[in-house]
Image (cartoon, rainbow, N blue to C red):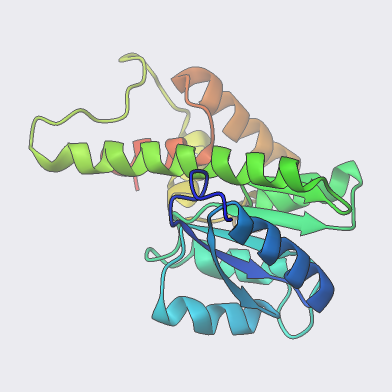
Length: 216
């Protein structure tokens, strides 16, 4: 008998070019109550996304035709898909690999091999966070509905303002660095400073704050 409480009929898009991993992960997630749609590479995943919008994407990094990096760059530029949580699965576990994956736009980076229970925990955590953001957005329906809260006296430098505008457009730190002709580490420092100033927790909240306050 399937365990249906965890998934609650949430639909996941699982992308990997390894059919054995697809089978194992799909079976495990379906056992936990999730509905799982699969694709073998990023290009096939984009075709799936044209017809449906999953609650979360679980994606391998190294794949033929279109890898995970290019896929995430693409979905982060499309308003229809930019909000979807993305979990990267990768055999590359070095610190620089994790940093690259997260900077490109993944929400979670897990290294193969992984424990199935940890995967489920990360999926559930990401879905809960996405649900909170969606509920907050829905609550903004009225003119006086609450916006994302930051200290009233937050002041951004001109450079920080340019960076947050690019963040709100869904650009990764690497892309912003190329646009401004500075190092990626410099952009990461600006983002970190803005998170400290505003008290926000991640780039997603920073982007929403910029959009809600007409900075983007």
